[in-house]
Length: 320
Image 1 (spheres, rainbow, N blue to C red):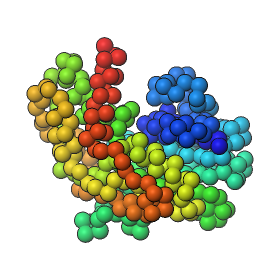
Image 2 (image 1 turned 180 degrees about the vertical axis):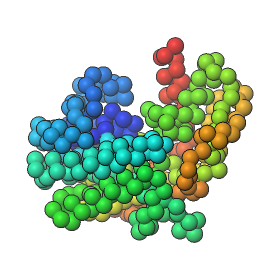
Image 3 (image 1 turned 120 degrees about the horizontal axis):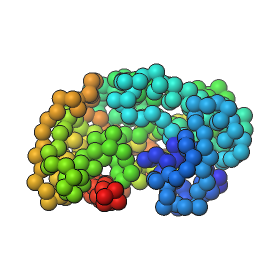
Image 4 (image 1 turned 90 degrees about the horizontal axis):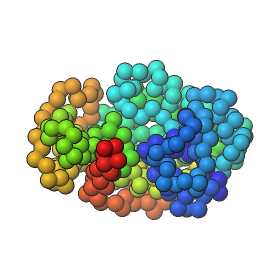
């Protein structure tokens, strides 16, 4: 089986590459720039890379015509909510037009291939507590431009399955965390800062935003496994909510991480880290993907947080 992963050098993409290699697939990946890809260095020659940008329609046609994959995991996207607020047009272009280019190239060059379209739990938006946990029937209530872009991706994938019979499966993952995530995201930022404090690089003062928000956090390695199973065992045209099924507050996550370090750290609230339209609670109901594929989140949260902190300790050591 030949697999293509867009966004392979990113956080989730690199872990999905690990999963696909472990499954014995021939793995190809799209990267925006040529040269070394730090998140993929450990895979060496077990994967092949093709340089292309999903917003370039001609480039996507060239990539799929050359690679001719059996499976396509479309992960490439602008996924940072604050960036979506500062550059909504760029986010909509990258995410919606980028996915359209992938679909059009698939349709022309490999119409029998299977495509996993990655949406987001953010499409559910301002969910009322009485409607938790969230499943696939929840209405769209996007609360930011990133969420709007993911609604567009979600519906575009559905439309091309309906109108052209393409084998497209959609997933709506909730928050996933773990090693290799950039510090643009809260848990990775905590881990990096704690590692820098341990190394004596910065003072032991951690500034935080909204700590009461609750999210459904899943280890990225479990999410990668869910992606594989959803495309192999999922129903074309269907959509699957992916998450652990439990909501934890940001404060609880930080307290676990603080217990893993010996440094005496002061935590201070910073209004600049608050974001507009922040949702109080998001919790997944993963029963559909569990019933269809047998997937379950398996890695304990405490292990994920320890692995994330250890990853950033290694990054800090390597940079010194």
